[in-house]
Image (cartoon, rainbow, N blue to C red; front, top):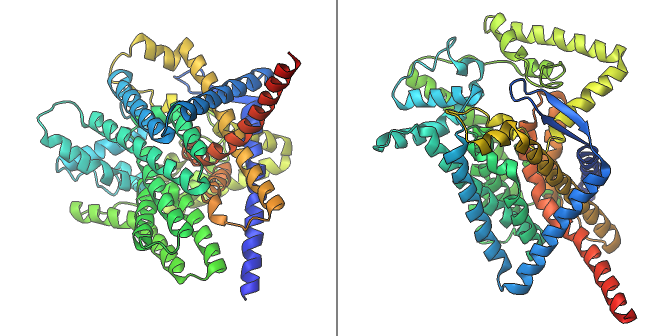
Length: 530
């Protein structure tokens, strides 16, 4: 049995290695060859533009030179480069987050506004927003976790003698959560790679990630859920990497809390839970540490019960029950349909189907099954169309370097300044898109270099496999597979891009170092000749 477990672990490790190489190079190829973006903020139609490879190479070279120069300067002129860069990065994020709060004038809109308004009403004591047929939560009850997050923040703000809307305060909280993400991910980078250069590269990449900074003004589930997930994943890795630590119980509890809260705030983070459970199970097969099974069970039970418990608490408070909401099959059907923005993006099918079915889940599922069957028949009869459909759907999500950050933060409570108007809809928007595209190329290339280095290092040096190193990537792989079929949106894959940052921080030095050595040899040869 032990031999079988070891073989299964080794097979899984090698399978994940192959998948990591394939997916990283697939993402890099798509982002390097084309750019997806929205030019018209009214229609938000996603356009696809084929890129000039020379400009792509130039953008990568500029980024690499900037990162190399910054790393060399820090290590030559400072005694604590990581500490200094950490402080500078956090200050930069706080300052830019503050500027966005004051001048971008972003307000919650669409689903974000619905969730915020419900939380505001509940904070005022109005429970009528919990209703079986006339509430947003009856269509999307999974948002009840985010409501539970917003409500105490709004209640606290209402106690203060300040008359500004509470969403300004929540944006400040989001900036703090942004810093929390950076701190936990930097700790994760150091835990995995034990390299100060990788730590520095991560901090610079985090500070240069403009969509990440812009999302601090988007009052929805991405930032708080990823902050919780970052803490949970770090704690889980700490528990797995240092099994004899005297604080292993603390790390286990922190991992459960972090992963559970991330699922509560964003239900799609069940993908992160599945990734964690796969790693926990396989690590148990290798080491037979039964505490891992307890940890996995606790993560599962807490994550699967948190939303039903929160929903039940609100139902008891209001004295009314919510419906089960738009069905999973309707989202799957919508992911196979065309949309005015891009293939597989939201077109209202989930809401309309559930509404026309009289909020009857069984009837909505039957309509969705028929829609899925029709689309599958179309794909079968026209395979060339099917290939184009899913290629465009894939690129619209993973080749958009802005990750729809402009669209997500577009709504405003007043006229924006000329600078921010240009950033969203004018000449600066094209510069922003180009920058984000170059950044995305570096991100995917760095991740690919990391996975190639891990694969090559094990083959050359006979390193013992450590599957937990791929925890973040397994979540990315799950998100990639999920959104091939599910409703699509570049915003939905944004958190997975953040999970790639620790890998890119290891991969980029492996690109820089050989180039720096070659440049140094050329310089030395030139000196000898003279």
